[in-house]
Length: 502
Image 1 (cartoon, one colour):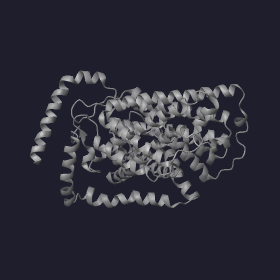
Image 2 (tube, rainbow, N blue to C red):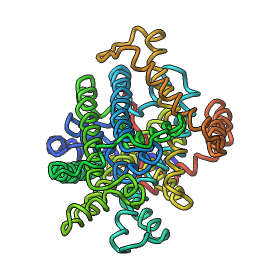
Image 3 (cartoon, helix red, strand yellow):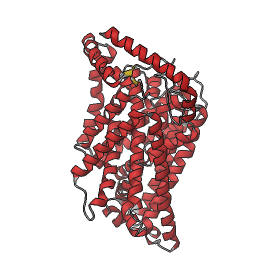
Image 4 (cartoon, rainbow, N blue to C red):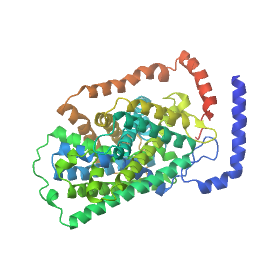
């Protein structure tokens, strides 16, 4: 039976390759994203523009339309709030510059996973992939789709909050649609990404221009006494930074797909230096626009700041704001799903996750098992969750790994001097990122110790219970148990192992 399936797969693959051989040129012309010509090799098809679209499209999600409230709440007044938004932009740019050096030095997909492997060995990289694949990526996907559902359902419930069951069902539906799109075709997923990136830049432009018009009319009272009433604690500033940086999260997305970038040593740093400052400027200007028409109290009371802004300024065209915010969050969820699939794929390929996750669809050339796995976990995260507790939990673990990755950069300056570095940042920058991430991890815990931080830490280290028997020792019974399961899933999904690229 087993030999039979292998023969079938071999013949299918050969047939596929012969078909692709004849249509290779047309594929190359059509491809915007990564569409492998052979069954399971990812092509270098992402140019500079697609790279910028992925960064901008994933960063501008729901954060700027939901988080302004949280940043304002913890920072205490309009002035510090705007300063924190600007500072978060600078931090994201500095962090991404470190990633530019790492990505051009180690040209493997998988983001932090590959860099932690190189610098600290497989154990830490395994803990990263365990935490990220099981918690961080799916919970972030869940958070984005929940805010998508919140905005999409609000117009149908004027004057009150949509019922939870409605937002959760809509959110689950969005996850299913996005996973399906990503499984069907990489090209389709990239078209979706580019379309929604243009849409979100358009709505930001509308909000900023409307804000400028209001400023020109003399609506400056909220901005003139911007620093009144501020005395936030150190921990509160940490939480304000958390929520601001949540809106900037996604600056490392391009590093997850380095293997598919054309000329990464040029395009990776360029995409970062164009994309992230563009997002930072947009964010600060959008916040200024909000404060031209709403007082700090109104911003805090609004269930969805961008919608309230639209109702005040753009009436009778105020419906365009929720429509485009829905577009924006959907596009960001698509980008998040896209890169999450790549991380699970690389992790499975290196043997740190079950092998089936590293398999690639024979007909559609997408890492379907990895994408479906991420989607199923995300649906589980929707069931209990309140968005804000998820964000704080998420940032705590996320920044720990950002700090470790910046530390990896410093460590490799001394341990891996022989590696070619097309981009080289001053060592002060990763040093600063390490300090900031220590602060962002520790300040909220010291300020307000909560059990969820302890649960998070326990969960991260619980990965070790699986690491020793299944990854390090590769126990026999586990291999025997997984073999028929893998084979049946392989036949069900029509997926094959990736070909060796080295």
